[in-house]
Image (cartoon, rainbow, N blue to C red; front, side, top):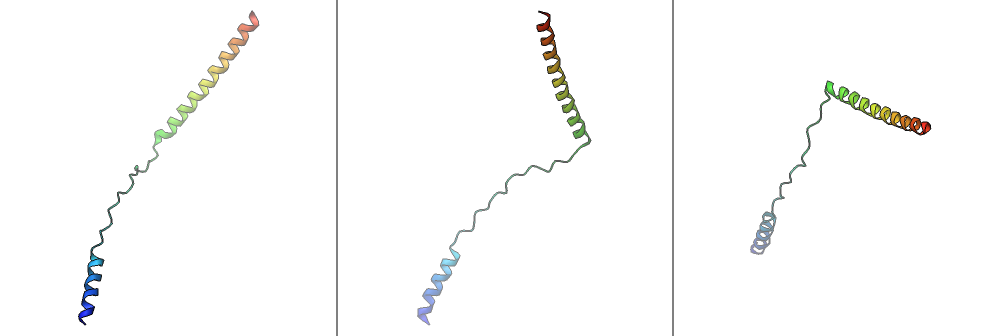
Length: 71
């Protein structure tokens, strides 16, 4: 019985000496975005700006063609 005490003590010390796992920080997550009534208005505004850009580019090209034809 005496020979059993030493291995049991060694086993108990080995089991208790392990370091607890380091706490891991959860990755930061942005809060979920909630749709607002202004989102659609912003999309419409951006679309209108894009259309205006296209119209301006076409008008510039046409102006250049007219000027080239007059010369």
